Image (tube, one colour):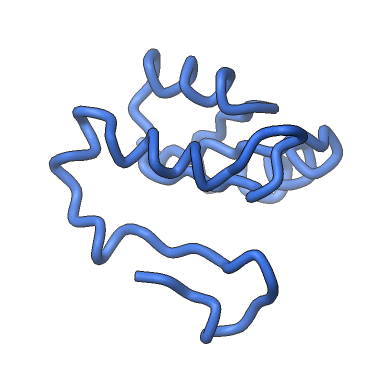
Length: 97
């Protein structure tokens, strides 16, 4: 079975493009907002959440906080499993651990 990814982005073309690029190697779920993402996480086991930091009027980091607080995420090593790209840029210096 392929690893699972949840893509959370309020822009449909971004969700669809990422899904198309990843669906051959991963089981891909998509959501347009935090509520939709949490609904997927209630029903499915997800290995990776890929989220936009700006989700319309919502904050993608709020979703990250919610995901880290879920019971099944307590078994994961967050130091090894959490990487994010900062609001202002890219590159290795923007990675958080």
